[in-house]
Length: 309
Image (cartoon, rainbow, N blue to C red; front, side, top):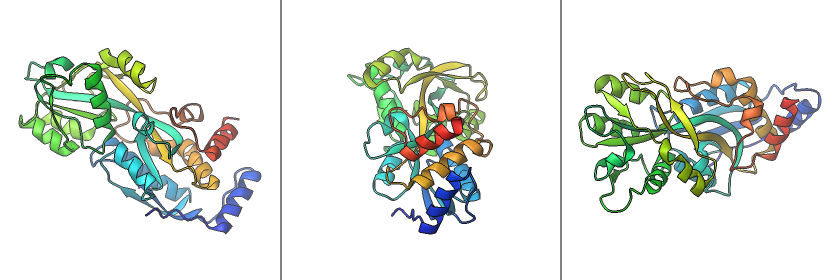
């Protein structure tokens, strides 16, 4: 159950503070917040833990609980069921819900298709008939991967044999040859994939060839993204599919809370950079507001306009 409770005194203090130029109450706005993160070893959980630290330090909440989850799809469900107050979510997954709004676009996710370097697989169509993990059912990667395989015409006869493995299980299965490839959507470098590349030589497959088909079918939420050479041991530079990460909540989150979370995203950005955030991040007012296909929480939109000047 969601535990977001806003005290009347804190709400009045926060409202008064906004009128006098940003002074803050000495008391947290809420007693407790629950943030839905992601899988252990992945970007979402790492970012959620950093966010929790900053939300507590900024007195948005007295305590912030971070939940480990399968990823975007499960996070959406937790927010819908009021079992989480905030969540990290891929923009393409978020587009499927009309029950959430955004507090900001925070980072770029990179869809990564990993194979063993010793195998002859070099392009996505080479995976026809192979054993592939697309990520657990609650992960946004499973959604993006399915759409990619449809765009590539690979879900007909002799389609890849899909398994829904968690990150650690998928890397173990790839290392031992139980699967031929794994998809993962996250920051770069993902620590678990770095560990894998130290254990067994790997290769990343380029995926941007199908970008135009994805955009035609699902909109501009999909972008071309580049994973630099040596992101993982021995891996060459490749182009892939990028999807923005959004920080989401329910529309009824009180305005004072939403506004103060925006302050944390903007003013405490230096404390919100995970080790797996070598790629694009959007922690400034100009970029944070780009939350399409979701609308911004009204109080967040107002706060961004104030901060932007």
